[in-house]
Image (cartoon, helix red, strand yellow):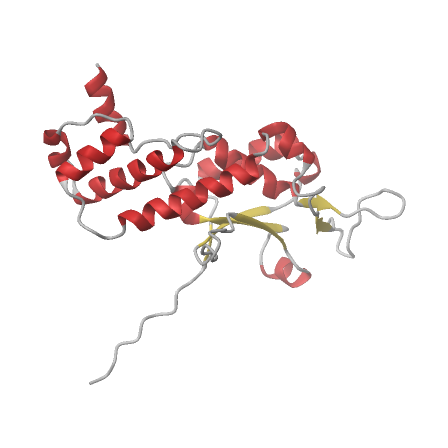
Length: 239
């Protein structure tokens, strides 16, 4: 009997500048316009990374800015690619404020390379030469000024999301246990409402509740945005 082989997983997906990804590129362009004037002519691509996993201490990479090499520039019209951890960026619990800080931070790594006279370097084809800039100390001061000490909080938030996801796993989410868990997270939802949710909706609600309960003990972190069906149930209950 021939053993079926699993196809090799692809770790990266470049995001096309299409209608589907218009919001994330619009966010990128707003940040460049507001805070990164030297990058206005840079060709910046965004890409998902699906291979970054938490290490033994729970630390996980959320983003990385990569400068295109000379060969890369021959193959594709990019000067930089900003890699983002897809699961974190797409998680409903992550706020737009957190996404903004992460993207702003990665843009700070991208900058123009200058010659000894303080003029931007160009290559023999007339293209601007770019480089990757390191942190001031542990963080760019401009990012601290705009977003506060976001990095440690965001890393903790990402770790909390991972723990919440691990806790819910693929196990069956019971109706009564979910009602109790949501109540512990500060949301009162009737058993009849929970019974109407699909299994995927119950699992998403359970993951959010687990995250919310954990964040209650960490007042410095933003509270997690609830899934739409949980928010709707809460609004109905409060009205």
